Amino acid sequence: MTRYIGIDVGTSMVKAAAFDPQGRTLAVESRPVGLTIRGGFVEQDMDEVYGAVCEVLAALGSDGVAFAGLTGQGDGVWLVDAAGRPVRTAISWMDGRAHELVDAWLASGVFGAVYRRTGSAMFPGCPGPVLAWLDRHDPASLDAATTALYCKDMVFQRLTGVRATDVSDASMPFLDPMTRMYSSDVVAALGLVHRASLLAPVSDPVATAELPSGVRISNGPYDLPASALGAGVTRPGDGLLIVGTCLAALVATEQLDLDGEPAGLHISTDRPGHWLRAMPAMVGTAALDWILTTTGVRHAEVDALLAATAPGANGVRVLPYFAPSGERAPFVEPRLRAELTGVSLETTPADLIRAVCEGIGFAARHCLEAAGLTGTLALCGGGTRSPAWMRLFADVLGRPVRIVEGEVGARGAVLAAAQRFGAELDTAAWTAPTTVVEPDPERAVFYAKAYEDHLARLAAARTHARA
Image (cartoon, rainbow, N blue to C red; front, side, top):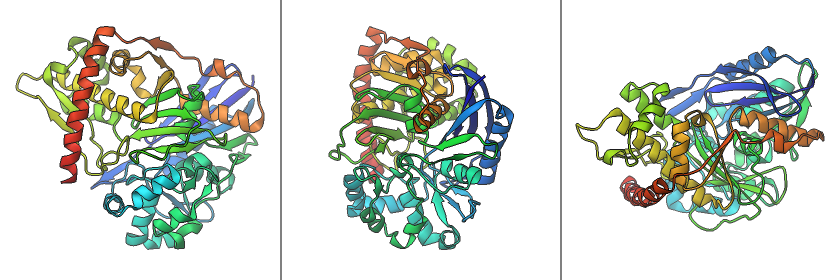
């Protein structure tokens, strides 16, 4: 049987999925990978990540594989030598060490100027600030490196020997979205001209090569645009919400709008003149994980607890900005932190959990509105495993949501590879939703008012964060 392999190198899990020609999942292999978190620094062991990729590929085997597609987490800095070997641990997109640089660029106007040039709003864990921080505090690592790669590009080079990135990963923050090449103005504005040689060549269209097994493989796009492809989000106005570690809102567009508050990014795709307006928030399932750990509640209990509490969580409200690097979309506030209000001795774990889930839903609505959602909406990611939370999302967002389950990023990596290799796959069958959840009209009205309250409390919190 002909098979197609999609590889998704996530932040905490590396997966590879095998699909048949109709897009049905035949097998999935996964391996967890670690994160080291200390004092705002978030790092990963490249050898561990690469080893996990090799393990999942070996477990699936290469018999009958027509080709493979690779995707993975974006941003961060993965410094390697000429052979693609690490010169230090990888700095994750979750890292917060460069927040003072971002603060300074916000104050000086550099931040806004970069956004107006590229459509990408920097945040502490993206390559521009991280490289600038390393240049000031760890120049020896940059001196030892040949390339500052993104995660999937590190894997691609180790697997194939090819040094390259693609336009989607390069969109943050150095790519000119019109020329689809690095902007020398942005490199200069960030004080990195003397480090420009570290930027990987942009392969447009994406690079292809062969695995040691002889299987063809394509490199890219990274996980956000790959998931959009896997969910069938390609028509302008249609959107995708990824409910994972990162709560990412993406809307397909043919308009490059560089006005308004600098936030999020415009992800270039394999089609010139077509972008994904992305609002990848730092908030996500990590916030729910934190409250579950704090309350001692298991994931399996979430649905029952959500069903046992009414909308509004008995007055408990949560601004769910728990990331140590603050928030990056649909606004940038490196010093913003989470807030819980309305808590009393009568507050139950169910109240806290519902309040966090509602807060994440409000953050999602904020991101989708800022990204320009006008069409259909698909949801994917680990959060979709909770039916009660998906109903809550539909209510908070006030619209039907298409639930797309399974390995959506890996599926999108295969569809991207099919385009690159000229293979004809039935994209409608490959991207069909598992179910569609309709909002409850009364709850949608309630949450529309609660959302306005969320925005007011958020505005106050942002003012406090800047004080």
